[in-house]
Length: 163
Image (cartoon, rainbow, N blue to C red; front, side, top):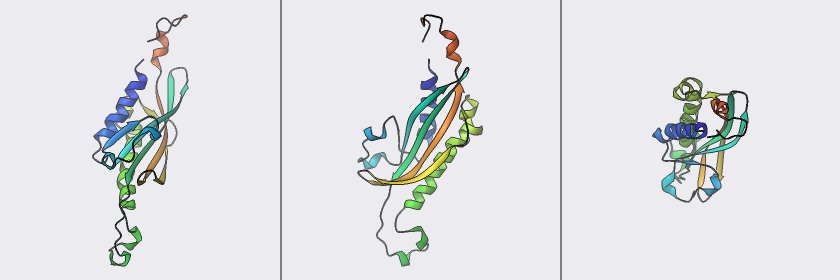
């Protein structure tokens, strides 16, 4: 059964192909060495559950995109746009929103949709700011993806044909 690998490969290819992302990781975010500044901007994918239907599997996953906040320490009044603050937080939000939006768009009507992956419902993205080893900010998007469950026909009564 390669269905899981195919989905992971598609997500990796999309995120790795983005010029806005340096590193793509999967699994438990706590196992990623977030102290390495060279890995940012980072995209992380965590699969939380899979729901089985007759011919469809729905994968629930969380995609996190983040970058390190660079505190400038400039005089706020001397900036052209003081409402944007003293650091690059809004720049990070803007650029990484493009990554999150691109993934959901690809699932709705793009290359991932053409590969038989389809959004179930409407994904939601939440802004976050956290302090791991570095101060980071970005987006966390929860999305459910429907994909074909064709491998079930391969299993006979004793499971001997299970891939």
